[in-house]
Amino acid sequence: MSRPPCEVADVIREYGKQFVQTYGRLLDLIHLRVLHAVENCRTAALGGHIEECDQCRHRVISYNSCRNRHCPKCQGAAREKWLANRTADLLPVPYFHVVFTLPQLLAPLALQNKRVVYGILFRAASETLLEVAADPKHLGAGTGFLAVLHTWGQNLQHHPICTAWCRAVVYRRIIPSGFPRAGASCYR
Image (cartoon, rainbow, N blue to C red; front, side, top):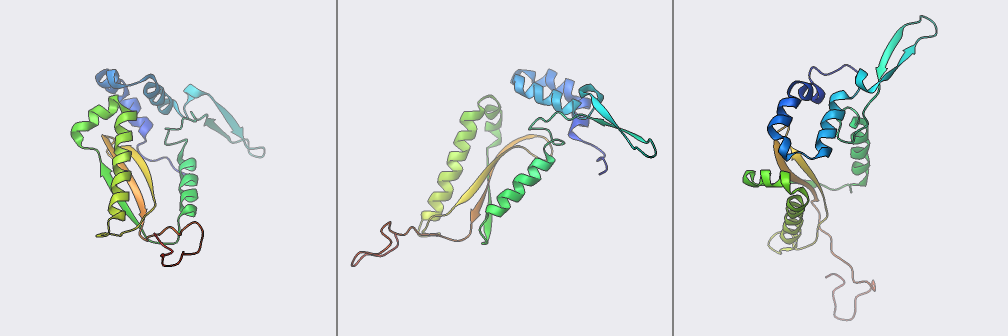
């Protein structure tokens, strides 16, 4: 596999110090560790090993990875496995893709209060999806969904969104006994 022309690690090497000087007061120690890990991933800084062909003696140096869960180099395979597993979980029905965006004015607040602000974003998304689906003017039934938090846009700018995939079919709960009582509907 060939190396892309520009990687996240290249951006961190070029602008990381300036970024930390400018925004360091907003960063936790965890963020600084992630920046350091991604910057040094698969470089001599983390050590490595030499692979040598037994026949021609050709040598290839392979540097160690950081194995940080936020590193795009290290987590590429894990991301693909996660996507495959989630795809296997999906029912063979159509889905809707719904995006809930945190207003830009609140984004700086989210950087300093992640758990609270992102929790509110997820609750608002969940309650909205369930309320709209239950409304007889829309579906009039329950629905299921999977929601994921994205905190950075493709341009590497802070842009928190909650993305949800919702089933495009409805379900109704069957009464626990399994049989309707006289004069009762088996659905509620």
